[in-house]
Length: 158
Image (tube, rainbow, N blue to C red; front, side, top):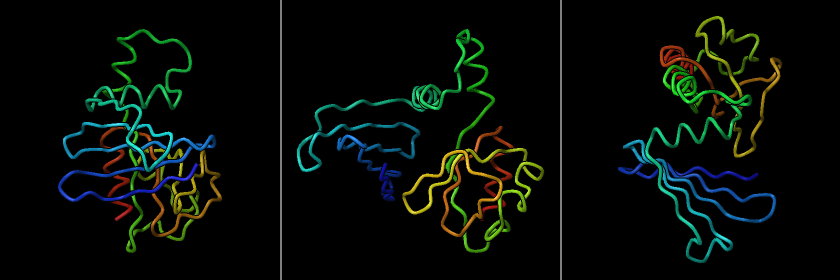
């Protein structure tokens, strides 16, 4: 799936995707935490459907789409999981300590406690990357961990 990211100053970020079936989806992540999803048959037309989510609703939907709750989990356990675990996208900067190192060499899990579950490299998504994958400047790492673990990884990526 081709994913394009656009910064929207004062608003947030826009992600535009084209599915394998040729359908177009736009996701807006607002600075407020709210999200909007737009569905297009043709990207030049008006959206056929629009859905708005609060931050909490978006996180729950994201967890479902990621398969976090593969086994049926009671709502209270799912709420606990969603409150304690974060999934974030973090860009690797030019001065990052982990730039040009493999996932194994960077010792991300040992240093931060977070786990890399995906890499967006110029719009190409590498899911569940191997520990031999080299992290490069501009990569956007998808990581899972506690708030503190994610913050530690953000610090490494700067």
